[in-house]
Image (tube, rainbow over all chains, first blue to last red):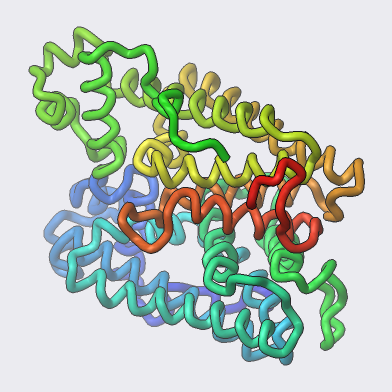
Length: 213
Length: 213
């Protein structure tokens, strides 16, 4: 539930050249899909020659891996930070759902590539990305399970509830449109309330730390 | 919540030639995305010449429209049938969420093309498909609103709850894998229970008609 900060940058640490290329590849993959975007499209969007592209990352597959890994690492860090700032299962899950859904709105193009192009990754790349995704999933599952164990939540099937909480956040990247009536923070608040209700935590209320949901 | 029947066919009414072509185009779009699939790929998958493709539908854009329209029409019919067989908001929303989520598993390749390639439609095609999608959305919203009005549900924001219920169903088509541990009917049951809890209807119970959720 933190505001956008300078850690809200999935390409943190990348120099200007690699960053320009990653952003061009991301735009091309988001617009035309991985298979529909050519290396030439990406080079043109980055203002580079194809040789300039190959100097940074050899292939289109490498670019997809770089984007996917950065995106999954970034959203995992956002989730870890969300729970680290809250105490108690209810406040932690609220923060987790809020920040996860808001991330998928704020970074909706990145999220689309990261979440919908998993099958286009090479097997050796996919295994790295799948492991990052599993860490995010385990975090959700653990926090929901903790809430059930401590009596904060009442849901008969933690696995399905975890799947649904993640799925709601991911699907934001499909329908979100910047400038529409729903903002990243508004989506985060609404979905945090709905997921808490789904988990049997009762209607949303002010959390233990006094933060408004 | 009906079993698979002969109305569970999105291409009902299409002859063998058009059906073969629609299925080939669907497979190509689902595997490589609309922009990544060529008319030549589609013709090869259908066992036709490119000229044979053009005899049925002139362009790749026409094939995407035919698939999108058939899919949106089919899922709308499934939803209308689901509510028509139940009385009372709780049973009707349970059936709606169940059948909508199960449809997105059972027809996951069709659902992916229908839900994720909206932006690839030509404007004149998109308006037809958007109107069909709005009819499905209005059906969900109306049934949820009816439940709030009659006291069956307690949710502070019908718009967000409707969005979430639809979104959960749609995202099934992203993660569902045939032969995995989750079946279309199992997903339908789990999600119907979770959405009813999200709507403040309390834990899932046997419906008025004696149907197990």
